[in-house]
Length: 363
Length: 256
Image 1 (cartoon, each protein chain N blue to C red):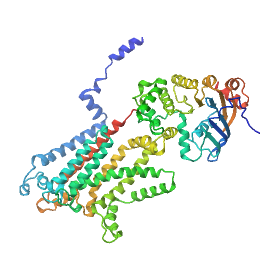
Image 2: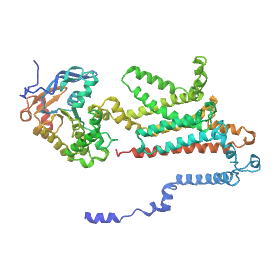
Image 3: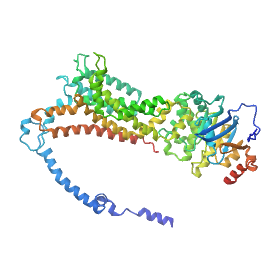
Image 4: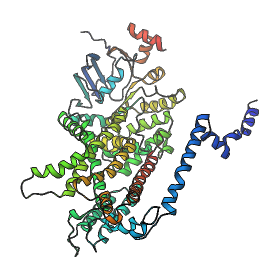
């Protein structure tokens, strides 16, 4: 009897309507009358939107022409990008020295890509980073090996965006972890300090922190002492980000079952090892999605430095558009910029998804 | 003297490895443990039973300071438990603990779970720690799973790994906090077998459990706790065949 049943079950195939193109259409687009209506409405909307957009962007457009040629066309004038690419990407970096920021950025991206593999996360990688940061710093600043000095006030465009966001993340993340641990500390002084810090920073917009760092802070410094403007903006970004990271990490710490602490305690592990080896690896893995959310917004929020007159890649684009020759082509420029931001953000978020998958250990 | 603890003859020549004197513990206003006196000799096996909420888990958790006691003394292997963190860590390294829910580290492989304590607490070289870990895994018959993660093992296997993890620290005493009560029935035996083997080798053990068969065959002393007190303790044959206290009789009638 049972054998007969199993034999029968093996022969059963899924109903035809669930497989193939028709099955797919039926389950995903036309599963009920309101889904069918939605599908039709959306199709009509796309039919209205896509062809003219496509025409504007690709058919009637010019890709590499003078500003004059663009006056006579209806489509997009992409020429604004190649004609101004040097200023958009590098801003005020001195003529003839372009290779330095370009090489620095290439080193940074190269090293980021190299660091993606978890098997390479060793002590030697940390040294590699340290050496590379020194090299990138010398490339940007110059003053050695016959490279003329370039003051930070001339650092602008994409390198500035990278510097602010990269160092913002790298420094803010461990600082946020320490703040989160501090906030959960048994010691009242440390706990209060961390709570006050986190809540104060989170109660203030980033813009006001940037203003404070660029306008108010120098007022408190003794005469003659100045702190670099880029550095001040960077510190504001780090302080701001760390507070948000701290709360995300704290969420992860709270999600840890008490049994993990108890198991570590019962082995006699001291606090620092318990945190480093048991609790943080698990807690940080839990909070990968919200952490990446914060890191993405740091990357994008660096564009707020325009208000303290730093020329990040958004500001250099805006400057390009203030040139009367190219003033009318803001859509094209902003689409280009959006793409640029999107590529980096998408790379970060897809990497985080991969990391999550790799760290999954089947529990 | 109102001492409900009819002591049985144990080897008085040996120095007790655990001494608890007039220990009290409160959770807020709730008196969880009241006037606990207990001496455990080396190699002694004690089974602690009692209704839920009687304080039996809390008692053994006090012994490695997962819970803090407020009055009295707990001395483990010559070290008194106080707020001194160094002393606490010293005691914890000597006292192994097995939990109801295993509490393995899910992000580490089985072998990493086992070597963590030896490497970071005992400062054993990694290679040596791994050899020892494999030896203990072999002992709990699970060596072939060394490279897997805890989440890939069954409950019984995880609990055996947890026992092996404690053993890797070469503990003087092993505490078991209801080691089989989270397991499916068919897995209880494999864990109990490991514990019996351990008992035969002479490990000092305090076991909170409802496995009365285990208590009868392994324990030197069975202890009954109720409402935060040690009501009665005796050798298993006396305890089960001729319980002295009404509360013990009632409890035994309910579970046997």
